[in-house]
Image (cartoon, rainbow, N blue to C red):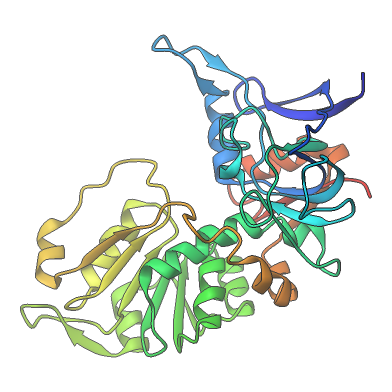
Length: 345
């Protein structure tokens, strides 16, 4: 029996690397050798819990981790016609019939090999060019999340936008906004190195929200406007919350002009007291952005075209032989921005 390494949730805030049976593809399947897989906040969420709840008593089960994989096709079933051995592919984690890959399903993208059931280009996988590094291709899934929030914003070139949070999703949104032709994009964060990265990927200005007044800076950058009652507000048209902290939500409400939009893409880990009166005075539109209903492969070609720009989002590339350290980095606040685990060629 051929085996492979698989990364599972272990004890709280720990991973287990175990040997499991290497899958064998059926006639409609493909087998992908994973070459890179990013670590996401969802992975660390499962690690904080120690797995996934299975009953009301709080019992947990270990789950395979990793939903940001890129790899190379090594086997295809007889009925698969649009893939061939050697194709480099990115994967749609939500396209697996056995549950979302790396998010509670039976499969994990942090395995050495990943079985793609009912493999179909454009549905379960997309092929990317050979000149794109696997580590950059592994950004496909989070960049689809970022693209969806930008699509939800319906940002136009003349709009003035602020992105709160200079993590991978916020920076990805910044890149997509600029590629969309948006003239002025501001990024706000509390970590100076992240603000430097925001400028490096194309932000027009940054705000250190730990030391600067957000409303005053946005007014300086985007001009002065007013809310529905005529009270002075910043001229910002669109606020994107890629930070997920209550202070961001309130900063947007405090700054919002009449008919501004707030797009919420970050997961709110704790409930926020929403200033409904402030929203009412600005007629602020709250738009929720979840996942990537259509964007998972919409981004692939542009990710390849702008590979050097997107590569700047990766702060740490860690070999699979040191996967424990990769997850330690991801679990330590402020230690890393985007960690990608790479597998031997």
